[in-house]
Image 1 (spheres, rainbow, N blue to C red):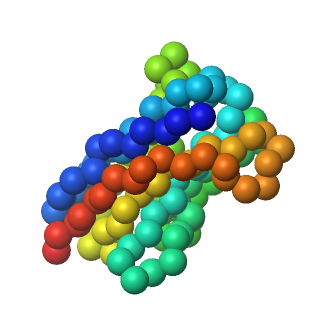
Image 2: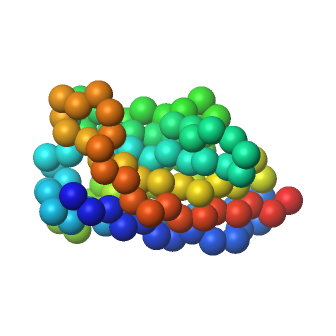
Image 3: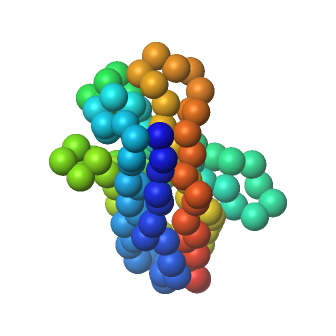
Length: 118
């Protein structure tokens, strides 16, 4: 499985960005996808994921109500719509994939940097 994340960049506080993660090697319906982020000097943080076969979405507390996870099975791509961005959202964002019954994410994208200016 290969994951290609894109869409990061520089945005002002209050703005929006949409990240994409293109999946190859497996169909999107056969894996569970998630997003994580890591800010400079901080540990990796959970952002959002699909669970229960992709039927449900879960979000980290810090992004709940502002970020939305979606998918396009035809394009084998997952999206993370990020609204009302804050400077503390600045981080490298990684998409990840795992099997339906796996506890850990086995596949990771290369990361895309989102910088939110105040």
